[in-house]
Image (tube, rainbow, N blue to C red; front, side, top):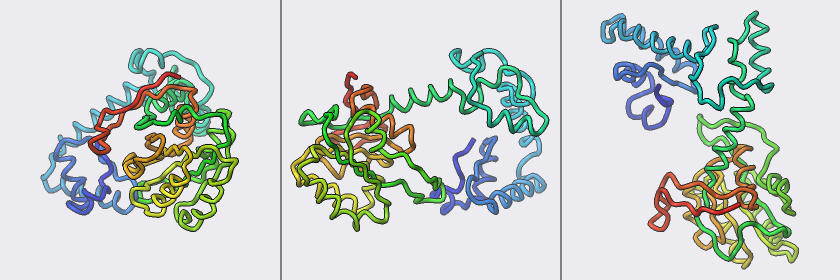
Length: 312
């Protein structure tokens, strides 16, 4: 399976449609074109033409179809039970009640999920538990000083830059969850501010003024691609001048953290989905340990594989 062929490096260097044919020639069974319907149609037409012209042998297409059907059969997606042991043991044989959406869709079409499949459908309790464990284990403590972590049960100003669709691959989803609400759920007394990406400069003065108030004892900032946004960088730098503990959590791009070496603590969360926000809040509040390690280097001081490990 390929990654999305609309990625800039592929689309600009080869062209999405041309690259789709090249990918099949190289052995890909599934070609992903995830965003633009017209490109999907053009790629299918180009692949058909490649077969008709003899550029790609029809037997090559047949081989991919057989592999894909075999995998679907193995996972129980063709109306027959999934083979025992095809998923991890902890997922096999569990009966859960969290997958009614897909069950209802199947029922409306006069179909039933394969016996035993229900526990293995996306959204099942087993899957959600696994997602939670993976998310919690990913949160990475890059830097910690001044005894700032875990956060004290003091009044905390939390400023989160709201996620935004920056590329065609980003999903624009309305969300009510925030890092502040997740911290409040951990028992931290918070003033919570979510700032739209385009309004950071406009709101910075008011936020810094509030942060300077005597009732605010510590500050948490969730950045969103701050490395490419001077307004976010200036906001955090202005907050650092107040002399109060500041925790910076990178909610998308971990390279944001390189902009704030003076922060009391630097945390890489890698994303701003609700589960990641909850995991980040748990970690900085001390409810779970930090277990994550950097997948990339953040300068010479923090190489790939770096991550401060803590106890809950």
